[in-house]
Length: 367
Image 1 (cartoon, helix red, strand yellow):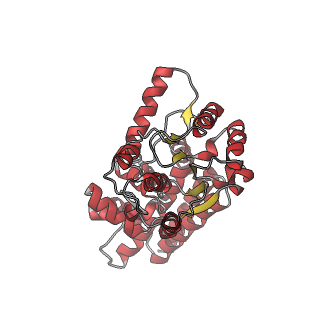
Image 2: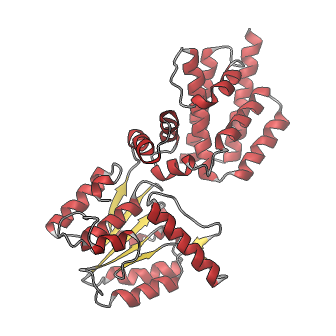
Image 3: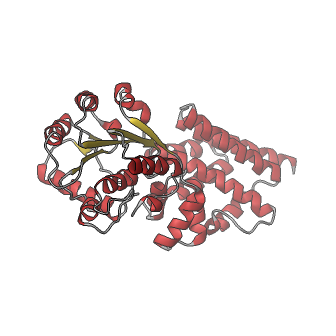
């Protein structure tokens, strides 16, 4: 993989390619943006390009250096990522190796552990002992610190010393999905490069060509993944295949209009899904009302074509087209409140269901 295979991200690629060509790389970079948008992939590609034996501004992917970095096995390219608190050394080592294998197989994968993770200060201190030694075989040492926002305060303060006086033959690359959790002093000492959302078209095409996803499913996943190819893969591989079914259950409870059932369903949904997943569910609900509306208009191309039967039954409870439109607008407004204004997701889901209940009742009373 080289820079041209990274999905979108024209600005980051232009900045880094230009710096490589002019030999003007910064000593420290901070790649920030949503999960699954290519920060990790680009960090690896930069490490490969820095040490590629072809002496070009991109990695050749054929030389020993590129291949070792691709396998996370290069002695001069150190990778640090959050790990669970040590309990069983053998178990932790196996989990870490499994994590690495996932990232080697598909660098865009959002990999993780089933326990709380952090970057302990011991990892940073070990790094500091290592980077002041001369490279073993590479032109330059490269350090990639993934999810840097998960450093302990002691880890962050320790790293700060290295960022203030970086060794001459070392490049540090930090990645972060939550820019605001980093110490301002760390941010200020890095060249910051923002990674934007990937276009739905790029995600759809990649799912079809690399994973042979059905076109309709690829279109749907590209629509709801919020510009994150990593999240699209997560959904494609079934980690959250029940998300839409729970969304349909919420809609059904809302349409039936029994307040007790609505509250029970909302509690069940919140017990199963984290905050990011609930945002994805809001997007599904929006796409469901969009499909109901488009079907009424005679549009055959639905985002949720595999759920057409379920959506048709639900749409029959909304006798008027403008009622479906109002429901769609309500979903969009509440989703925005929960995401941008950090409103309560429970309150948001309950409010949405009660609004749908009200819309259905008004429709029935005017027929």
